Image 1 (cartoon, rainbow, N blue to C red):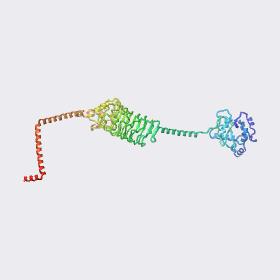
Image 2 (cartoon, rainbow, N blue to C red; image 1 turned 120 degrees about the horizontal axis):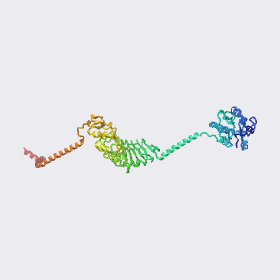
Image 3 (cartoon, rainbow, N blue to C red; image 1 turned 135 degrees about the vertical axis):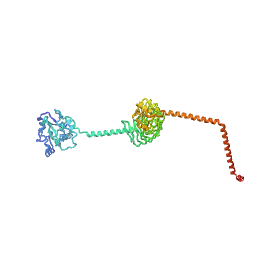
Image 4 (cartoon, one colour; image 1 turned 180 degrees about the horizontal axis):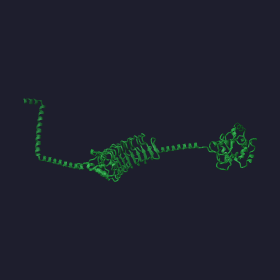
Length: 553
């Protein structure tokens, strides 16, 4: 084993005796203070470095001794005078000081009062990696006594880096390995590798899920955003677990039967502003769990009643705002019974003049019906019977002039109806609106009923309906004009029938005179026609023409 520095338990005198003569005597080959001629020359050339060295008596007084290992005697001839051990310890000390590790070569752990001996095996581990591969002229390590407790000098010797004598020496625990270098670069490199692996994993998951390149997929929310990507058809490689799909603003044109792949978990489909003109049969059949369908702002001409296939659809919300020129495009779908679970129907902004009879009869689960911003003039053909779940009805921004008694009776019969919108309609305040005024005063279903006002006549212009009294209407005609007109039509028919019967009776009584008169007219017509025939024959034959002219002469 190699020789190492250690704290000796023997007295200073014994330590000095074991080390032999001092620096003035010839250098001993077995002591740590032996210097090679190169070291002596370097010491003479650099006195600034040598002033940090302490004489051997001071080291002996500090209790330091040089111990030799058993194998040093056999290898001493090859290593004497080269200062390998001093050089290795000096390099280790410089590295320890530069790395900020304040360790002490005296073998004491900071915070402990007792000093421990550094074993030969620990020193070998510490100095082994720092030993150069070829001999280099040795360089003595500057040492200075460590401050003893209480601020007095006289502690064991400690290595001092050149030019840094004022710094506190670093302490090294007994038996500890070499000081560990900072690993911040390694940690940063590993972090970058981890980030790259995570991004690659996320990309692989996205590709494995089938997210089409022009779209953006969110695995956490299970949504696919393909809005405004210029798509001419629905992407085929959509993730099967998609719950929300947005295709808004793509010029799709139409939805054929094979438009969508199998998406069993899709619930929200947005197809607004897609220039759709037709939705063919079975186009939405691969979407059995569809709840919300947005078809706003599309010029729809045809929607097949079998667009959802042969089975009933689970659709709950259907938006057709601004998508219909007339309701016949979707009338077959609404009346065909394919939407038994539909709860929200939006037909706003379509310019509808009227509604087909029984258009809502096959929607038993309908809760919200939006008919605002159309051109509806009357609701006499509309039947609200069977809509027991209806909660809100919006008829604002239409052309309604009045609500007839039949319509008011149907609205009263709906048990769950809570909100009715009637604002921005040109109400005509005549005698026919009296029943509606009374209904408004009694009902709490109409939203903003205080803002409903008259648009005609001029005497009641902008007057709220709820403030109109019967005397303000000045009804000079009977209230039920329709029944009066029906009575007049019946009387007119009876009079016309009586006149016809009298005419026929007169003809029957004068039948003989009429017959004689008819015969006379026939004979006169026959004589007149014979004269014309005779003249035609004479004019056609030249001989008869000359004879006729001579006879005339």
